[in-house]
Length: 264
Image 1 (cartoon, rainbow, N blue to C red):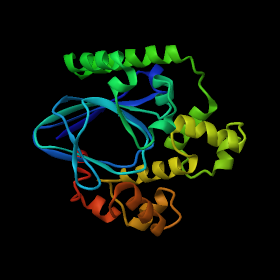
Image 2 (tube, helix red, strand yellow):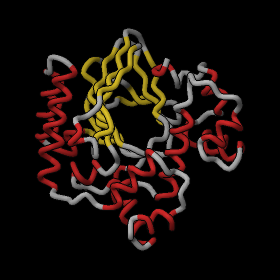
Image 3 (cartoon, helix red, strand yellow):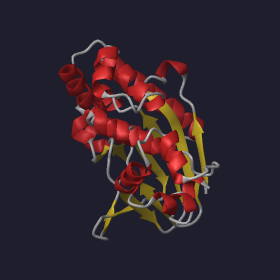
Image 4 (spheres, one colour):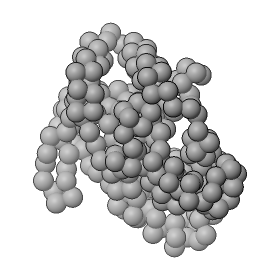
């Protein structure tokens, strides 16, 4: 299996975190764990099925959006596959699709449902693209056009979202609202509209994601990892990890859970 990322052009880095490609020649089950950000996916070779919590199988989409989430979803395919993805900051949902990010929390949607004919045309362009560089260019043009049409200013809450993701998942809500010159009520309302989740839950997921990134890196113990990622103690770390991944961190970091196959 091969996974790699492509950075966005600088003028779109405030909305797009990166592009990614995942390809495999055999069957695979993907664990889509809690995520504070948003993904646009195009399955240009093969189509995954979703495994529901009850164990039933339902067909997934060819192209669509995964909103910010705090629940585990699993997807499986029994043959080779290729996926092209765009990893957006969560405010991309209201900016590009004119709906609240909160409406997409823990949800997925097909592009054709969000964009009607525009979604069908975008999917067709991606499927017919010669390579992933061309797919990046298509998605950059799409993002530029949708941003121009939305005409939404770069609000202070956008900087707060990026700040939490990259630097400060442990700051309390009062400190964050004061840092961006908003009342706590204004901050929490705007944050949920543009990030899809409450600031507290969003910060917990970012902290969890920072812990998963330590896979394949040397860690002395779960306790030291918990402290490194801003948890009060090991028990809080284990509790959050189980909630957001569906497994104990020891199982995840063992490399035998299946959830880390794409990282290996």
